[in-house]
Length: 215
Ligand code: PRP
Ligand code: URA
Image (cartoon, rainbow, N blue to C red; front, top):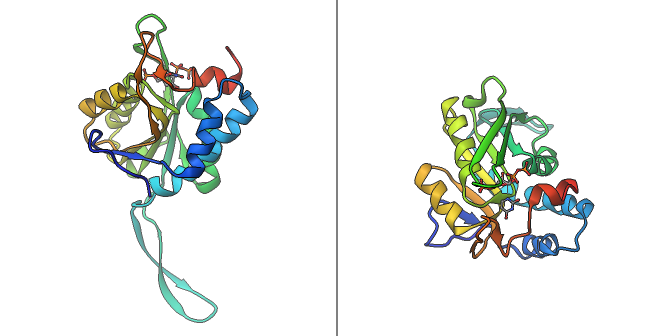
């Protein structure tokens, strides 16, 4: 089970030793992009189990080799939405658990000078509002990108939105909570602060660059 921190409403912190071990390797500047990607997917998969704990289910009549019984099935299709680029590298970990999930995409980058989010792409499957949405992005810094993506999903009528991040800054959590107080946020770590360039400290650097080897 994730833990909670009274400073951060709606935030579940995944401080499991296995997750913290893998995250520490990711933070190391010497870790190359292949291992970085593998670890990001592994951590996402480990987090996904609890992110999905309260997914709605409905009764399902099942005939076992012995008798009939009432089992359960997920009540609505789940849509996974990565925030491009970096969120793409969390998809394999989630789709391994949810091979039947629908997938949407939001393309957002931060303007380098202002750190304001710029949206360049958004496409969601029909019926995205009919079930839970798992929004994924490894980094929650100022919170601008995630807040914008949540607003786009709410405009589509989505009500059950869950954000999964790897590392968050307290400033970003506060901003996101102010914009979307109803949003559950799942993180592997809450770091100290943002620096003057709006990077997370200690963080792990630029996630997209480390995933795709573009720095
Ligand atoms: C990173 C990260 C988030 C965003 C977080 O993306 O993946 O989307 O920054 O910052 P924020 O909370 O201040 O909005 P980036 O803008 O570097 O784009 P990229 O994934 O295309 O590299
Ligand atoms: N985006 C990143 O990839 N890293 C940060 O520290 C902040 C925003």
